[in-house]
Length: 421
Image (tube, rainbow, N blue to C red; front, top):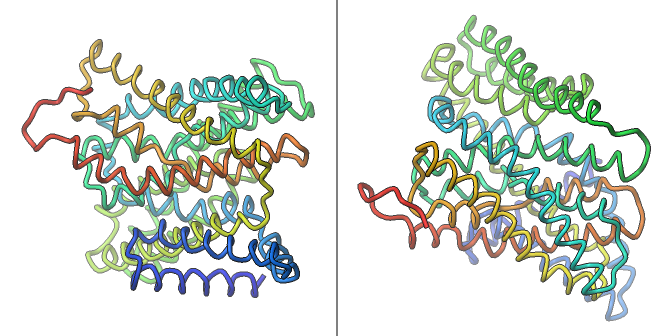
C-alpha cells in the first residue's frame, strides 16, 4: 500500500509540474491527459515486444481498487470540501430546481440512456447485452460528477444563480444515482427480491437517512467547534467528522455522500459564521482547499492510468462513439423539459442559455467509473466499463475544456434579460 501511494503521489506531482510548466491546461485535465499518454506509451511497449514492462505496469495499477479508493476513501473528503464553500442561503433559494434535477432528472435519464443504449448495442452492432445492464449503465452515467463539475466551475465564471444550480445538483444527484444503481444491480444479479416497498425503504434509508445523519454529525461537530478556539484542533475535528462520519454512515446503511454534503453545508455556513474565529476560518479554508486540489489531481491521474488494465474491443469503441450523443441528448431532455416547465408554469428564473450550459456542463467523472468497476465480472461488465470510460474521457477532455468558452459565448452581460434558449 505504501509503495502504491508513493507511486501515485509522485506521478501526480510530476504530471502537475509538467502541466503547470509547459502544457498549462486546468490541473485536473492536464494530469489526466499526461496519465493517458503514459498509459498509451506503456501499452505500445507491449505491442512492440516489451510485454513485461506493460504487464508490470498493469499489475501495479490493477493492485489499486479504484472503486474502494474513490467510493470509500477520496469521495467523503472531496464532497465535504466542495460543500464547505457553498452558500446555504443561495442553495435554499434554488432548492426546487436542484431537487427536481437531482431526483426526477437522474431517474428519467437512467431510462432514456438505458433504452437507447440497448437499441444501439443490440440492433446496430449485434452486441448481446440485457436491458437491465443497459439501465445500470444509464444509472451510473446519468449523475453529474461533483468532483469534475466543481473543479471546472471555479474557473468558468458562470452566473452565480446558475453556478449554484449546477453545483447543488452535482452534490446531491450522485447519492440518488447510487440508490437507483443499487436497486437495478439487485435485479440484475438476482440476489434479492426487488418490490415497490423495498425500493421505497431503500430510498428512505439511504437518501433521507443520509440527510438526517449528516445533520446530526454536523451539529455535534458544530458544538465542538463552538466550544474552543484552536485552529489545529478544529481542523482535526472536521477531518474526524468526514472520515469517521463516512465510515459510520456506511455501517448504518445510510448514504455517506449525502451525509457528507449536508455536514459540509452546515460547517461551511453555520459553523463558519458562529463557531470559528477569523484565524480558524483562514486555516480551515486553506487546509480543505489543499485537500480538494491534491485529491482531485490524484483522482484524475488514476482515471488516466485505468486505461492500462481495461480491454477495448473494436465494436465496443464504435458503439461508445454513438453512446456519447445519446448521453448528451438525454441530459438535454432531462434538463430542458424541467427547466421549461419550472420557468413557464412556476415562474422560476434561469440565466440566459441555462439549458445549453447545464447540458454541456454536466460532466461525468470518477464516480461513474467507480460504479462500473463495482459490477460483477462477466462480458456485460466489460461492455458497460468500455462505454463508461469513453463517455467519461469525452466529458472531461471535450466538455471540460470547452464549457468555459460556452459560458463566455452565450451568457449575456449582467442586467440583460433572463430568458433561455
